[in-house]
Length: 450
Image (cartoon, rainbow, N blue to C red; front, side, top):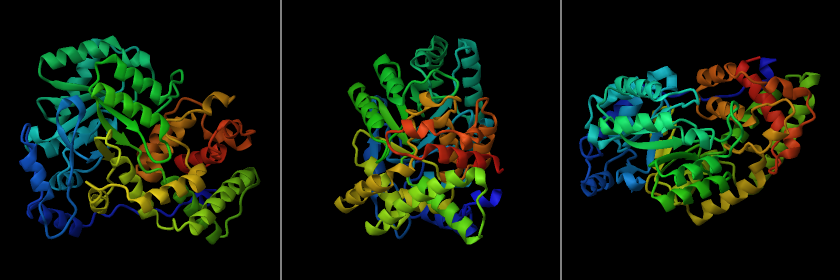
């Protein structure tokens, strides 16, 4: 059974030569951590834009809303190892997004290790807390102080509510009382909020509803949200609300291309190995393959064959929106540093815009849109589609396999294993024509290794 869902994956390249290359580049006039400081951004930007013999570097800094902090337009989000984080800071990245839940605090410890060797005022560090209705001022204070201890820093630039599922959580008084105290003590400077769309444990509220509600609330200074060239409307409306209230904006999940590529690789590998499809999965995989083949034909006819070109254009698409202040990338290896940092300060070209438009038209059905959740109400078994597909994204696009599988295993809800014999209510409800049932079944086998 595992052979059917086997994928061809490129493992992260952590070669020592890559490390030496970034250490060398750090000495070639690139932006070091000590160059940047509050109130002195012009010299920093000049240093970032200076000519260097080789290597990518940050070329643009944008004002993070009413915080006034100038952040690199490419930043880092999610867990990563210390050497990789140092390499990113050496080329000018100065916004770091982490959370208490990333590796159960391990990510914060890595950030703290790196912060010891840096000018703390040159960096904007944001962490996140999952806030429940049962939390109190004291529990929030205790967990916030633990975050600071793991980070080894006297203060946090921003504390966010992690993936706030409802407007009720946005207004959680225990959280706000704790933050008022921490601000008074000089331990937290700004408040933020992130959102991935509907959550399995809460009544469904859209990302747009939650974030626009947070903007109107007036107590949040920074937001982390989903926005990409396929999933535009909710993100665009949230960005507009942030502009109106001068709120800093940070983005995640900006490249929606990986789903199609991963599926295509899986199908090709299955065919290469001559794997038979069990009867109970035949209709699902046959449907998925039909959609993938249709997308593949479109890709060939419209010269969209290079996924790297689409990936770069996807980043340039969001950078071209001036309501976007920084794009949080999940860097997996040293090659990713060159790949993404070189996009700093660039804009979407007319030919790239045409290719993205074509991709959206011909391949949009292969992307189960992050933060959507439109189909969930139609599922008679209560499958948390948005959450499962987000975990699948961690596995497939971010190479966080263990994390994704652990999160999926901990879901106390009905999982994707029930989707194989369903009538496909989710697919009927999807306005984008996504083969949701098949993708959920595939996600279940990928996240359980069945």
